[in-house]
Amino acid sequence: MENNKTNSVTLIERNSTGIRAYFMKVYNYMAGGLALSGLIAYLCTKQPMVGWFYNLSADGYLSWTLLGWVAVFSPLLFIFMINSAAGRLDAKKSQLYFWLFSAAMGVSLSNILFLYSTESIAQAFVVTAAAFGGLSLYGYTTQKSLTGMGSFLFMGLIGVIVASIINIFVQSSAFMFGINVLALLIFVGLTAYDTQKLKEIYNEGDGSAEVESKAIIGAMALYLDFINMFRLLLYFLNDRR
Image 1 (cartoon, rainbow, N blue to C red):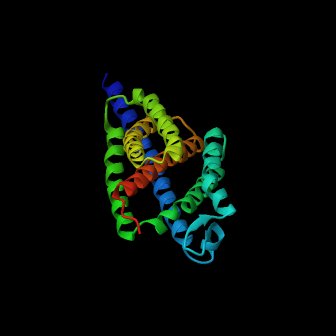
Image 2 (cartoon, rainbow, N blue to C red; image 1 turned 180 degrees about the vertical axis):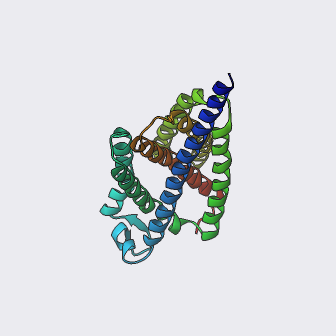
Image 3 (tube, rainbow, N blue to C red; image 1 turned 90 degrees about the vertical axis):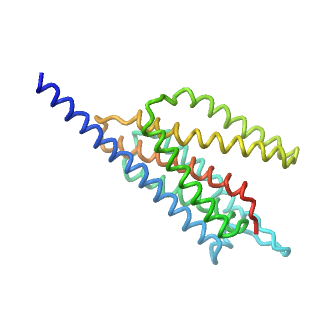
């Protein structure tokens, strides 16, 4: 009886150690991705890269070049590639796709450096980091299942996308404000939900390639939650240059 109890405690400790190491991988990848995106975004505001991705009109208006548009939409390709090949890519390819995804996101994020003041960007980043940390911690530690939130949040996200497309034609600032409030609430929920989901898909018996693949997919999901919250908070700060 005593041996069974000892074995159970040892198994729990081993699982706990394994899942902590797995989440450290997730958060390290996410932090590395954010750092790379930030660096690329900054470089895109300097010569020669600014000329690669932006056209500057005579009145000072910036628009994307063809290469800029390719960079803006390319993260969708990397998301598809990483998710569709989950568990089948070796660690080096998974990492390569993730870093390319982060770099492409950096290009698409570079426009905020032209639109917002440094102070508002820093403020939004700090608030986002604090909120993300609390929400992710809640998703990791809560005993309450958040599974039911998944389909609800996904439907809400689809609704936000459709409403945003409609507002392109309606051009209503009040409608846009409501859309962004809803979007912020959705990504708040997704941060906790995605963290819990990552915990649930962890398997002590996974091989190193599977663990690496799951960690990269998880980092990408949390990265997107973070970036979307950050961009929405910038919108609400409304401190444009």
